[in-house]
Length: 448
Image (cartoon, rainbow, N blue to C red):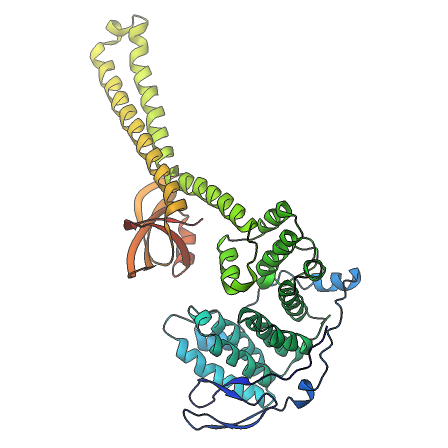
């Protein structure tokens, strides 16, 4: 596989006003048309003159074992980056601040600072994950292009090239994607870099209709070939698509079960709309996960009520029986009917209340199942928590407050959940997905 023609242009991030601008593909002096800031793009003449041959992938078992030893390690922001960001992610409202930090790291990395290159690479990923970046393809491309130019280590450059390949395919530019892929390093010793090449090459192979190559790159199922955790879900979607294109829809549906979150399928499909990923198996998988989600939502919504109602009903029946059995055996008059009657009366009241709670909980569970299937899928953030006063086995039932990103703007909602006290603080600030009643948005269930 090779690609020889030259690209029409090259995006970069202006170091002055942080806007995406276009420069010559080979590099050289440029000036931002908006702020007139001068800048020199690194020379790419030698790379553009390369015929663009792409080396075959190496699936030697010994090499795969060396990569597998690096798997399972979560990718976290370096401590220096966490210090300026205030955590492992970009906090809401601090997107522009993140761009300013990225510009500073870019300048230091371009001067050869390895630690700045590490931080810049990670921050590039975090910026790309910000809501709304999919609607700014020029910004995404410019950040990846500029990060590639400034990166010091080969694996840092590899990550940016992988993003550029996938962004180009998403934009429908096969030639540009193939060119970036030819600049990547196949069979890298680091799992992150190797995964970037494998997944990016699989995306290109999908556009080319080469399903067997996709499976050669990604393996027949998850973990057959080690892929870094952050890219595992995308690999599963392209692996499933390859099986579907080869006529094995059943295997495709089974592969999609590897996904840790059903939302990932729709996210990946929306990122590459022209590829029409998993056109048949997606519907089967979505229907199955919706049914499972409905069952879980029903179980979660009705659990506390059914348990409490069951306890009251059982206790009430026992008390009622304790009061009526002496009468049945003729001991009522001897024991004193007036001593037995209160016990039976209390038991009857508890039984009625327990049955009422069970009926209500079953209706609540049925409604939660309906919401999980038919409700609007929205993003929410946990912003508060308070005890309801109910505990089961010394575990309190908590009511969590949510700020939901609704179709007409943010609004407040809540849900209850049985949560140990030590886990409550861990949930605060977490982003979750919910299903909301289209006719009454404050009625929600978690997408668990």
